[in-house]
Amino acid sequence: MKLNEVVSSNIKRVGYENNELLVEYLSGAKYKYKEVPEELFAKLLEAESKGRFMNANIKGKFEFERV
Image (cartoon, rainbow, N blue to C red; front, top):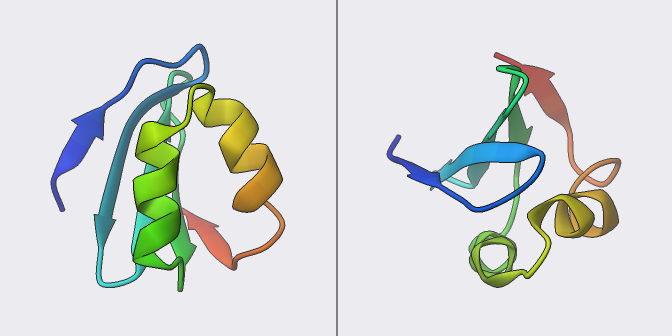
């Protein structure tokens, strides 16, 4: 999966493949969120605040695992 570096105070890189969103935080922690629609990934990339978008639209709404 290709990871895209993003400008964020909390997130370092994000990637998307086969309905899975991979988020690498600045802390080094990586999480894979499952069954995330591609449109949400596109909106995440466009969001002014990536962390705020994650909190409002991804976290707590999709199954995830730490990788």
